[in-house]
Length: 125
Ligand code: HEC
Image 1 (tube, rainbow, N blue to C red):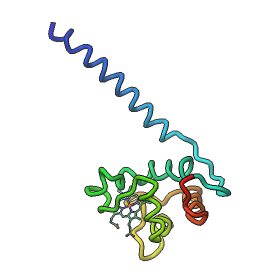
Image 2: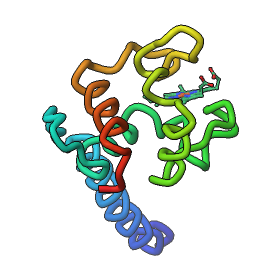
Image 3: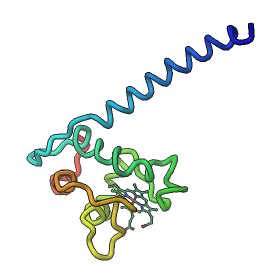
Image 4: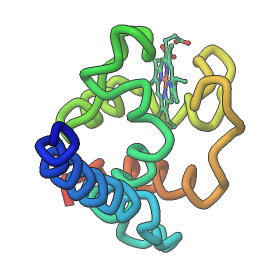
């Protein structure tokens, strides 16, 4: 009897889990174009930051994992690039903390996209 009563809960949880993992996979699997001609924040830059940076720097985790450097929204990312950060960090320029911390350098394509996006005015596009 006990088992029957909790069954609906398990079913609901399983469905919720399936939906959540689907959504996560979509973000991770999203193909990013390496075209640097007119870089889009939404389609190119943000997915890179989501994959490689937000696991430490998003607002809910930055205090414990990201050294209190918090960026998640466009405005927060823009404030950092305006202050001269992010590009030198991912390029591993001397004097800047190399990012992503404890991992290998981003692929050239991803560095080029972020650099071009900043040079093109770091637009919310
Ligand atoms: C494993 C956790 C982790 C990941 C992943 C990570 N960071 Fe960091 N980041 C940190 C910590 C901790 C600090 C603060 C200590 C320091 O500056 O080294 C930091 C600091 C920074 C700073 C300020 C650095 C400075 O020179 O003062 C920037 C900008 C930054 N990260 C950008 C990024 C970007 C962009 C990515 C993704 C490409 C990234 N981080 C990925 C943990 C991480």
